[in-house]
Image 1: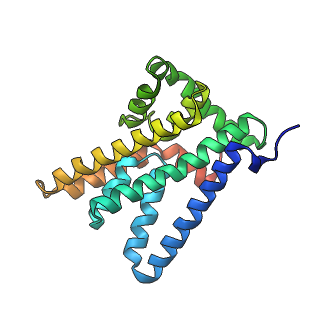
Image 2: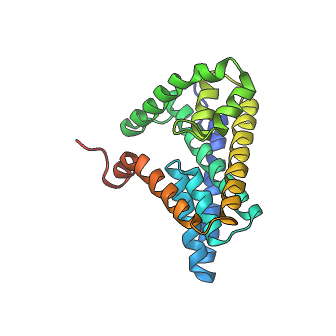
Length: 216
């Protein structure tokens, strides 16, 4: 007999993701009243991360004038939130706790991509997972890293510490690279704009599916 969904480890991770989402909504709601520009930046940064635009999200925060602690902390928070949802839903779908055709299809595509990449990680263990997540490539990132860790049967703590450390390292590197450019080139805003546009273009199919649903 199966455990109830929220008594499983993945169910608890999903609950934690919901808690983080509630805190985010409260934060954005607060700034919607106090400072709408900050609320707008927080929201746009969230959507940038949702569609895999880690660099774009960091760029948005820098353009707004957020300091290093706020920019790094907020972007890391968003990555943790997204990983909690993606990882828990992936595992719960794989174990038939969640049954929805569109979700199963989406998770199958994720599994296929992860399967293509896992050999690059498998030989190097924790450090391989860390480096995979840290790399600024289209197929890398914490969601894919966490799913690869699950497929390789990596211990949950090792999986999350590797993906978390890799994500934090990537965010810090992106921030200080952008910060370096911002202090030396007046055209930095155009560079940020180009990064954001490229991130949106690369995720255009996912965005269209989210807005209009699957095309028949």
